Image (cartoon, rainbow, N blue to C red):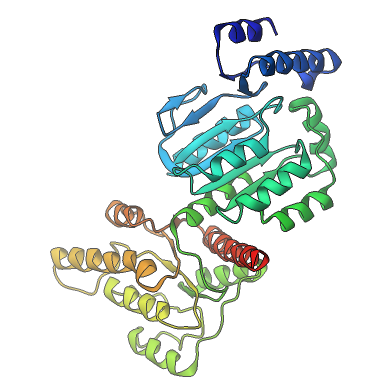
Length: 388
């Protein structure tokens, strides 16, 4: 409180309190927290924290957090936990996910989650908002704010304290009461929040939402060899995403492009272990994108192992041409494309990354990313109907 009083005297209008030993520690800590807030508000000073881990903003490259400066990107990450938020941010950076903002909100003594949502809704650098929360302060305002924000931008949320053991831990961590699981789930549904159940999923889903067009429906075509295609189909089904069987005439058209020994494609399309040319791969993918009853595509990314003969120079030219065609499909057809990387290629990865085509290493993550797009498309549609 004494330091806060000094700041008020100096005319400071904003602050970040990293210090702990406030409401999370008991009655005396709560008294100190309340006194600090009273002094700050008497001088018109707003602050983040306490018991947080700083903030970062890409707009002016301001880093007030004790970890390396993140790379710029479209995802704003708001974390109630300081150390956990820092670790998750570093993990996101290691996987190539860039951040527009990182805010470690701690005990939310002054500014709370609704304030940050309200701000980020109007932030041009932020395309997707990812939240790690343990407890909601002013639940009614948070709900009303979230419902408005999700009509503008997708909001993903991971809730700590969903179990009895986790809920007990939140009390001494960020002075949060975790709340009833059923009530929280219902609130997320009604507010249009996309709930995730693993922290890593926040960034996997956020990347797809930041860069890909929203599908018109939930009908997905899959291109994947053998068990890969089967796994993707299983995960899509578990997430409530459809993968319809191709119409008879389309099966014949696709079969003509596939290797002679490949089965007639029903969905997924299976090259049956062949090493197709990149040109043929992308021809199949574009054929799927052109179908009226397909809303999105999950496919292998063409690799430098995909070739149809010729010299090394000719093979490389074929791959680069094919990847360039693939990179333009979302814009051309208005449909999302999610890729799985089996063979790491700097050249292919660089083109796809430049074109904002999401790349993942597992069937699960590909399905999850597509689910996020389908889910938010449904949320946007429901929001527009309610407004109408």
